[in-house]
Image (tube, rainbow, N blue to C red; front, top):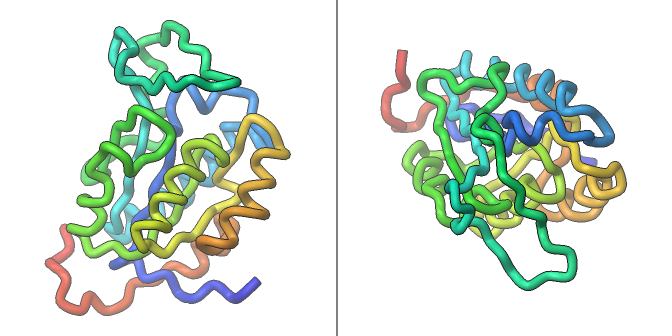
Length: 204
């Protein structure tokens, strides 16, 4: 594993996937949703302090559910009536003023949303990624980010899945091929603010 170079927060966004009421409380491994939230909050505090872009992604569907994908599949997702608060972000993470809020209708955060536009308008070339579930929403978003040319850092202890095997497969086999896998502390230790190089003035 190569040493993590400095993370310039002028060009880096934190993207957190599906840390919402209906997902965080699911039984997850190798850590609980509460543990994922604890590490996500540490990352959020650093990025917000630096006024770096923070993207909070949630998944939500219309009342009739007809905007949800319904492919012919051997193991289709069971659609149930969702509580109104199911798609609400957990209060520990926000939102806060200036956070970018993205609502998606499927696993990945790029398809059918303005995420790519919002990142590019802010000069972002690298994303720091976490959320639940590792091998669904996070991995789908990561694959799209890779194809769009973003550099990526995957925060292993700010993720969890429905099984430890599924989580470990993404961490071991997928993410190292399209980015760098690190811990929350490693990411925080590498964060810095370099020169703005002509970017628009930052908010105060």
